[in-house]
Length: 286
Image (cartoon, rainbow, N blue to C red; front, top):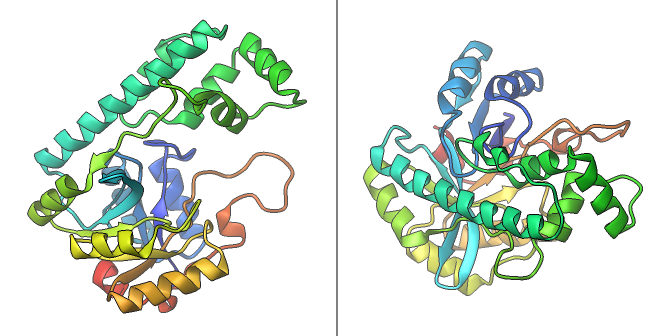
């Protein structure tokens, strides 16, 4: 059975609305799906409504930036009460921190000669997505030409601006709005659901000692199938899942239909997830 338990929409950094995402999934034969926007549940109701019409069963989902001691990582949260006032308070605090961080980045860029309209931030009521803000900045011809000249590029994309300007070393670089792991686990115990380590091999695989500490303190599962994972990473993840009796999940991390005349347009063109490959996934999807 085809499933997809990591998807993003325009409520965070995806490029399709929840309705468009549901239609996209239905055309590709998905039977169970989870919309996991960053730090917001704003798109859940719309997504569930359209998926119901398309015969797709929805798992309530969310992706969070998390910190435990000196370790930072992403967590997927499934099957929780997304109407919880405590959850909404937690997410709103995170969203406001993200907005303040992005404002500092824009202040620095303005000092460096970029043309900045702070109305950019007013467009985003939930998560402030770096890809959208970068695109907004590049819509200004002066900014586009500045980046093009400084980086020596023929064509500038949002990722070029993000990598070379947003994440520049310094006190006013773009950072994620992390939430403490302990706070998340305590809230999960109140409003339910499962916590799953998100694409753990994206960038690098956390040390097993760190992973074990997460298991001991409340981790329920680990994302095994991801376009960010190599074959070797998948082998290691499933050994760890068996060792610590974790549920395995999989997701396309879908964001967009890519622009341009390319044979591969999106993760779905080469990457599909069958629930048969995921041990104990029934803990989450049933």
